[in-house]
Image (cartoon, rainbow, N blue to C red; front, side):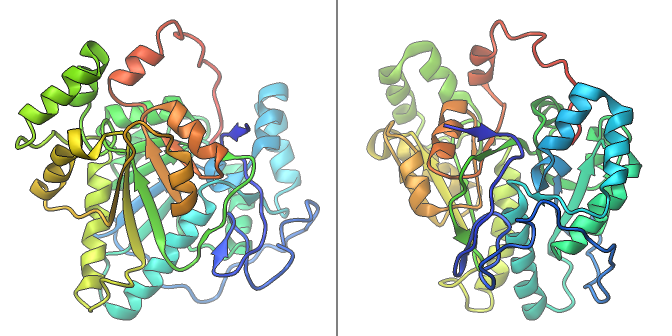
Length: 373
């Protein structure tokens, strides 16, 4: 199995697209690694929403684009050679990374929202959040224009951590290839996840944004997970039965699901519930009969809907995700992330809760190398 931070492949499809591919062409324009861009600025773009009104998705450059070669230059040759290489190749486009199809799906939802609500600023707003040097900015801008992405807001911090800017941008979700930065964001109360891509990407919908969530320690707190880790499965079932009418506390991604639900209701208000371009999924290892009641009652108590709920009772999540084909899947445990990647799903690790404290024993000091995002 191959699981790579910020690495992806491209291919074509119909109404389904692999990360960054186009159904209108049998050959994607970035397949030739030596394709040269002429710097361009698209003439007419819609006005971006005000940050306080938007659902802001901050993505690092290494998850939006494939920058593995450039990262290797930085790690092996240092910052000066990295910057020199980027400047020398600034008219060559980066190929899409694992977040690319997710961002394209956000833009497709925005297009439909603008048609239904021309004056509304309740839209997705994508911010490129990177600790790259500003010299790299020209290549990023040229690549964004080449792929016809609508990204107007950049934050390039020249090697400093971008975490301090996330709140200023009213960030609802931060996606990065750097697990250390993701942990920093979570500590600041910002929904965040480390994004991984499989070696071979499954096709995903071009017309419907699909987002899949784990439950415990992602949408919900890790309260129940702690019971399971400390006392085993039987005690976990007893605890959930005894507390099935007590809502779980919120987890780090609850706010993002809430934001998605807010936009879904705008489509419902126009009679589009059955063909809404946003669809959400709960994919949990919980058992439906033994512990599913509390999960569903918790969502109801929050006033949140989930379109589909899959209670797998400990079965692997990868095969179900292969059927769903989400643009993005969030889980707090790496073996579920790896299982999803094995089946071709873009998966994100949420390093939150008791599972991280158990899983990271003895790893202190191993994540010391700066990564450019």
